[in-house]
Image 1 (cartoon, rainbow, N blue to C red):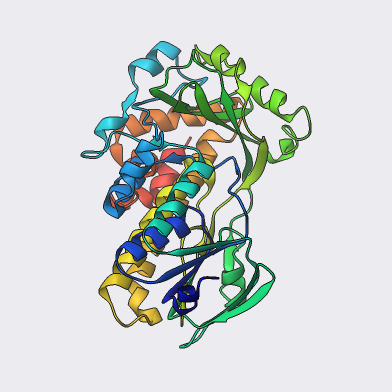
Image 2: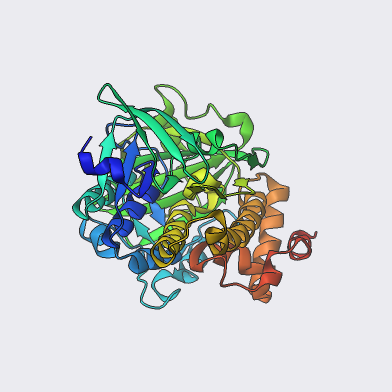
Length: 414
């Protein structure tokens, strides 16, 4: 370990999107930073590759947008909601203009997760941070003088930085070791993902989300004939895409009558693993204790159905970065603005994902009729569209009354 790393003011556990971005921006701000990562390489995790327009706005505020764009970050500009309840021509005619949702934001950004992680890790080290990979046996002790021990290259190290940041994902060891409890919803459905290539017949400016039969389908083009695909399926079909035949079974789900160019998808070639994972929200009531703060998935994650993980992580990074650069006192109370903003942000996104899970990931004639009624009500009264719009423009933009149980009951009423 480099000698100067032992004197780091901030130790970040986890070198993913959040850890790499925070390390980059803190180092650029003059802070001494050490990033610890257990893996030796970033791998395809079949998620974290679509960034909402409000998340793209965060990359600009953090000064990392140009980095992602230059590496192949792709902007779909049209959102077509193909669905079994809508004629395809009508769906196409009513496409959302993704480039017009937020000022100066050309739409969502799609880029491979390992690519993004590597870019941000490199940017962090270029800015002066130290990154150690293959780190083992991390142990964190909170307090006014926090302590972290770990093993790297066969040597044990003990450090006492001013602050330890848990950016180590859904199974955060930092969160567990400092005694912060994670809560979670029951699993509503399962989501499976697959990266495909060779789909030149699919328009690269079009992303789609819809429901047909027993699947909710999602297509996010990444450019150059590649796209990240997802399907949401009921809990009793969790093994539908498992095993050697999993990728083939996954692609069969895209034989869709409601999507005119679905043949381009089914002709694609798998370009990564095919995995399924349970969809549910998790949250923590506490994100900061003496000497430790949690960000991104370590602090609780949103149901991946609405694709908010990257945007949440980057908002967390910006808020924590700004506080660390502006304040000399890093007690838990310093992070109150972050904690309070995150609590309401995640509450609204949790509302959105629960509602959209009911509308888009429950199947059969009755569910289709309910979805059709909800779509008509969203058109009649924009307040009902708050849950859906939050996933694009940010949860703070739609009015608060769009995130209430009363609004949900009215939207779903027979």
